Length: 268
Image 1: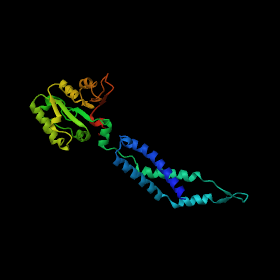
Image 2 (image 1 turned 180 degrees about the vertical axis):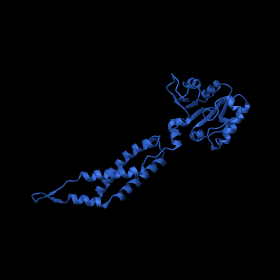
Image 3 (image 1 turned 30 degrees about the vertical axis):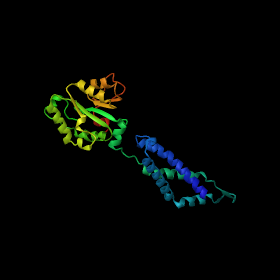
């Protein structure tokens, strides 16, 4: 009896292992091999909890039904014959185990942090222009009047700063424009998250200056609205994100196009 229970438990653990490997590969962007010891311990503990939960949920009537089916049944000649149902309990146990596991793995919408990490392919350094991406304004001339942070990208920006070295950059026409931009970012709370400081907001007087900044920083990603800047940087960076209503022709393979930062991350 003890050997039978051990074998039954072993088979369940094997099925659970295969099932979890598939589930976790879909839920988490990182592979199981990259999990730390604490995460692996949590998964192991969860697996044990599921196994014992399954054991507790097993109905005693199931074994009774199995015994009844194994009992002798008379045939037309009055001779008792024994019905074989060896395969039935195994199938029933498989379904019961999977149903218990499914209850713990109902589809869950990923968090914004998980989406950002997955979309950026675990990139560790990002450079991004301000106009038309982080700010409502689209030209340096508008910045001479005001600077307004787009509320729809604020959460995305804060998530990026949690695990990426983020640099913001823009072309401005005067020192007053710089002050307006920094004040707008400060009022939006971007500097209070700890991931971005004012020294990482860079200003230049030409579009080529933004290209030069990005080349020196060697980011994994550069985000821009100017196709020419993205094209010049494509040879020097891993990925370029061009925010444009349409994808220009002859774009490099490592350049991704999206109408907006929110749509790229699916956060609208």
